[in-house]
Image 1 (cartoon, rainbow, N blue to C red):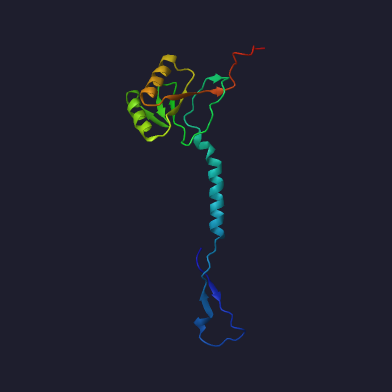
Image 2 (image 1 turned 90 degrees about the vertical axis):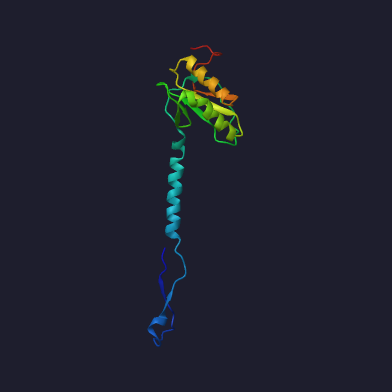
Length: 158
């Protein structure tokens, strides 16, 4: 973005001191700056949706309607994998530390809503134990995350 040298207009005469003909340019060339900003904008627009995936698990399918999404804070999610790991967002937490971690997080948040993502192959008893820990940690609004497109109990299969 450096400054360049501009030749001074002398009106066709070449008299005087040689160094007086050159004056430093005080203008900044912003074209490279704009180019870099546009490239960064495109990179972030493409990569932002990929950052919200989280931990890959096999969610059970259901025909339930989604919860309304009017929230001021980023939703907090607890994930249970089929190999027995429990994660808060993307950080793995031991089961005996789960309640204390959740209490610390609940103290910093305005909402007591949390989403539980559990692999479909996990026993029901394990899911209920984690739900009890969520409740003991201060979260009263627990949303169970599922995939859409599951069987409907009101419509006959055909």
